[in-house]
Image (cartoon, rainbow over all chains, first blue to last red; front, side):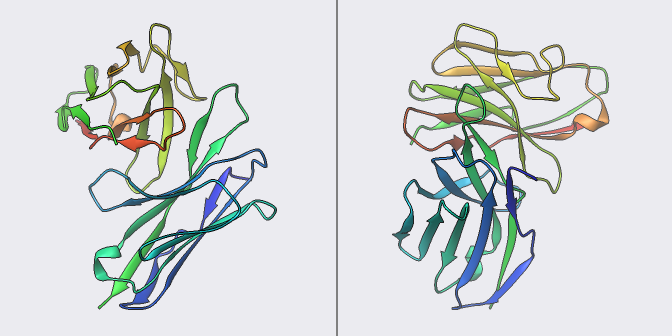
Length: 113
Length: 113
């Protein structure tokens, strides 16, 4: 089992719809969860982080965490064409003596005007 | 968040040569990391750059191939040694301060002929 898994996509949604991106992780000891957005040819940009079970909202973005199910998601409301990018889920790993972040394979999102 | 400057932004190199990539941060940070992102792939952690001591390498990466320096809390270098076409990739510097999420530099796009 891979440490962080995501649907590779591409996920296509119409403009104005809600985009739902999902991520599962294998390390039950993980405490920190991140969503990065990566435009083609650019480096990853942090858009959300969440540490506690439940929802965290920031503008059009909502991160949801369920540690019991080892599941984290990102909802993008009122999707815009500018949201078209690859979204990377990242999780901290406690399997080593030091704290490192593991990235999932990413989900490609396309918002259709 | 810290401003991360990475040099060079891109390079084209001959096989068998070596290239050193620099990462400069505008403030002192606890942790610095080097990642590789091969075309169409997610991020793979190469190593954690430790100030004043040898870097901590991930499985599949060795010091002879990817020597790393970190002389202080704001600067690190990654050298890609004896390059082959398989080393063509984007190399990313990432930093994290205590209890803060990771951020990335703009990356170095490396092509090996």
